[in-house]
Length: 169
Image (cartoon, rainbow, N blue to C red):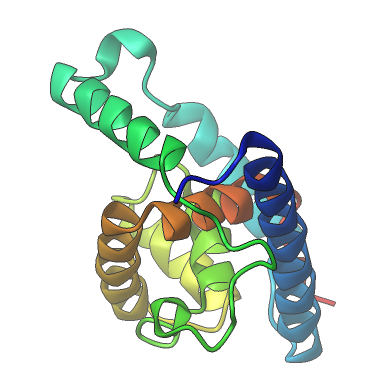
């Protein structure tokens, strides 16, 4: 059964609010454990983003553009949970110790510089993980995001709302 436009919109707003709550809880937990980014980390990450910008529309392959159309169609015909995602859902289980919020935070921090090993080490250290954790999490979360439009939607909400990186106290 299709979800009506109003029901879908309400469900998507619920996911947005849930993502923000998850990120706030993650930041608070990270800082409480004495982790987070330093001012120097933030400076280095900003420089990396300047030297590794996101690809422009002319740099996106036709195959990726077609994939985006397929995902858009899948999203249009998918029902979204009206009360948000159940946190006990196995699709949300951490991958290599990285929660969904931790993965989105690391991805937002790295941007398009995820091939820079020193930068990956800096980011994972700030988040209490290792580069090997990041590699495994990237594989696992990417697989989930690629094959489940609801999980992909939640990732989009998490990634978009990371905002300022959590700073170490």
